[in-house]
Length: 273
Image (cartoon, rainbow, N blue to C red):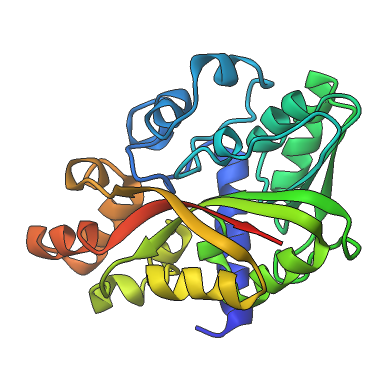
């Protein structure tokens, strides 16, 4: 698919998610697979305290890690969340940076922004704002934020190199990027690689781990480090509606499904400007 077509598909897919409260982007069975969004989030690193500290409806169980936990946020810092969705990580970040800090959520899906802004009103988050925009073209000035976080979103962007170039541009000198994302450790089967459903489900948009880390380094980041790496368990993907759609549409065998789970991992990575 062309870049413009991919963005259209992703925007429409996540627009539906915003309206229906369901998705499956995490390497676990998410809210729509029979477990609650909070159960999913616990499995990928969020604490009960974090889950109870955000407005109801802010967490859809969309992530593949907890970037806020590793971000070492400080009072007064300015944080930007790439692909902020209904605002879950933004609100957690806001609690850490305090009233003297600021959090900016970026999302290209109007339905998600509407939901995030409503959540901010419900939670009285005066230090959080949400902006409509693509993460390849960030609506922010040069050298304007201290840290960029992102949770299972950059893999959805067709031009990941540009995403990291943009992240570097808007970070202040000494700033840092901390992301959780899905990457490949070997090639996906063609049936998954060419699937629209798999793209929305954060599978077919993923690139190799080496290519992903190289893109961060080539953007100018230094001290690029992977803090954690988690495999995609086969027993969980079989509970995922995205996976089930692929299985039904393409008559995917258990062998192909096993190949998928052996191809993709969730990583947490940091880089410094």
